[in-house]
Length: 68
Image (cartoon, rainbow, N blue to C red; front, side, top):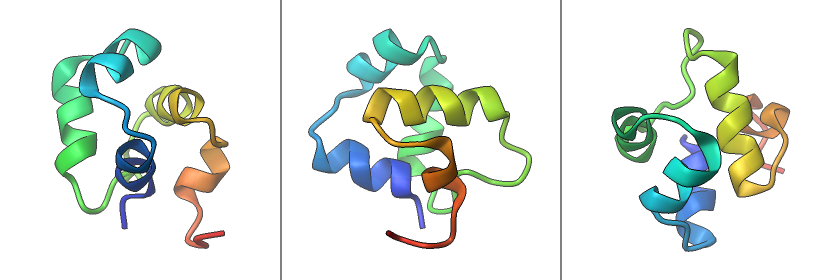
């Protein structure tokens, strides 16, 4: 399950907003928006932290198996 993608869509955030607020590359943002299993164990922690901050959740929330 890709919690980041769900929250990004729920909040109506655009890829442009994510690019501006995270400093991540467009290919990274596109991967997050298309992958069903993001983040993966090999995902750079800085990427997880940047996305979490941009969508207003903790990094722990994004990597936890729990949906709450």
